[in-house]
Length: 178
View: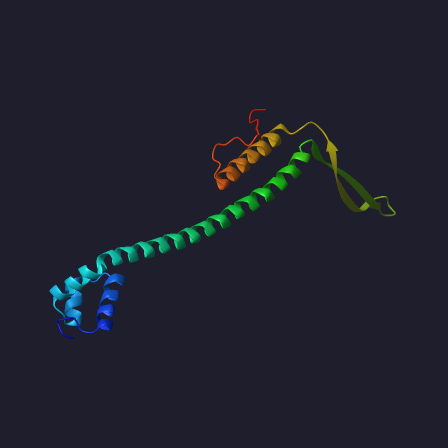
């Protein structure tokens, strides 16, 4: 290629390499066998530097958009899992709350059977133990109630954090001290 400029396709190729890359005028001139002065003049006249800055801006914007999409998808999935776990835990807490005034009572009955021989001496002794469980109503389990309340507060805090509400008042008030 001559130093006077060569054909248009070569200059277009040189321009595109400059605009799309990070190579300097000097390196491009060496690579394509043109003088630095000629290349610099073409670059200034063609506003290559401005084109490079625009290209970098477009690339940066696309990278930021793609990054934001990836991050937002991951965050949406994480929030979905947190809310699903909170729903599951809430179902368990509702079940536990309905059981706070019920207690399991275990009744055991032992029956002893003795077999005697003709001489009235014991020959065999069998002990049978029967166990039955019964659910009965009783006073509310205050410790259980405090534990359910603390768990409910944790769910509320987790959901608020997941939804980005932080300290907003949801209208639900938890009483910690019973």
